[in-house]
Length: 196
Image (cartoon, rainbow, N blue to C red):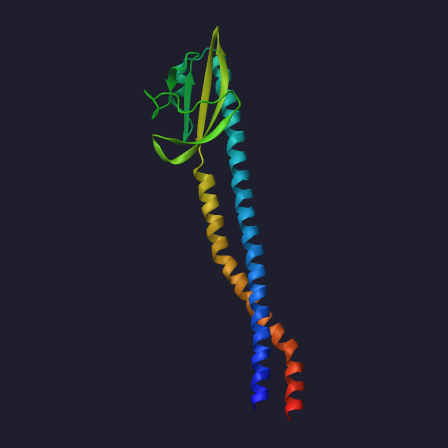
């Protein structure tokens, strides 16, 4: 009887170690994959925002060059957007609502972009700079758009993965437990016969 108990203990030990090892291996692989996936989603969505900002900035720069009133240009930005026009001396000559009276929000070279905080919203914005010429005057046009959709999508994906990964790990553990138990069943029967 003692020998049988030892056999069961050894069998359980192998089964437990195998199950734990499989769980850890799968958990590490899934965690690395989940973090990489979240990063890819975030970068991809940020790239989409940047593309739309670059297109809008190019359109606004063309309007500056066509001598449209600078303040009228920034009076009606799109939703969740800001615009600042900065002259060669670094003074803001026109700004959308929420930034009037504020200095240039960011210092960027034309074609550069950065994620930044804004004084009129809690969410971060992607700010992009381009140059625009009106007659002999050269301006820097800073256009920003909210990154809230990126943050929301990232939070959603993170939440879904946080719910799904433990379920996958539990499924792997249960499957490993059953498979290892079946694989060790003949050994247990042989031990029982030897004991008998």
